[in-house]
Length: 76
Image (cartoon, rainbow, N blue to C red):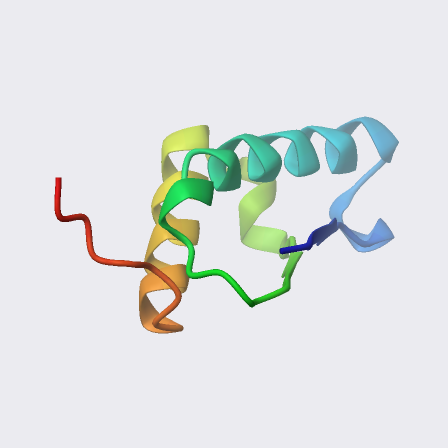
């Protein structure tokens, strides 16, 4: 599985864009064990994320993966 993360210049300067990408990488890293194999992902940061916290970003990514039916059932 490959995961691409991008943040366009409209989101702010390099420091802000890199912060967003770091937060998105950290949020997706917690979900790696639950994503169905055989899929490549491209995550694109959008303007509302500039002021979002890690918890909000994590929740949004988890919801997005669920809506896309990419999460496996947790049978532990």
